[in-house]
Amino acid sequence: MSLRIKLWISARWKQRNARVVELVSVTEPIHLLVADESARARSEVARLVVECCHNVRIAGEACDHGDLFRLFRSVYADVLLMDLNMLGEAATDEVILRGSFGLGCILAMSARCDERAKAKARRYGATELLDKSRLGTTLQPAIDRWAALTRKPLWQ
Image (tube, rainbow, N blue to C red; front, side):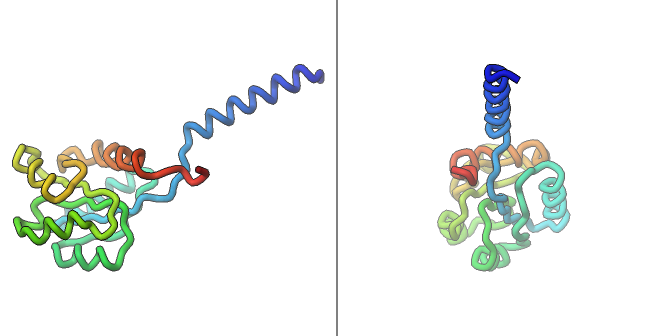
């Protein structure tokens, strides 16, 4: 084989590998903390994470605000996905959630995504408000948007 052919093959191999490296982003898993009063809703979110969300692991589940704040202290999580109506209207909850115990992102979910719900989500410091009925199609993109801004591939 001539030197020219070897160089051409080498250049093609580098081009193909560079493309693969661009397409595959290797990062650490994203740890998700799920907070909802309904056990059925929490199990449905867990099922959606397994089926639809790549590189996302459930770090814990909370059924009320006391359980949520205990989990903040004991479990490492990057993202909190919480039902907007779970915490009620207590002002102290809003302050604590804004501090978020080192969370990278708060995603609120609600059955209604009207202006009142959006305002409440902003008060809690939520990055986005997701519709519960469309969670299967909106959860992964919301996590990806947050991860693209804050996380870097392992090799960088």
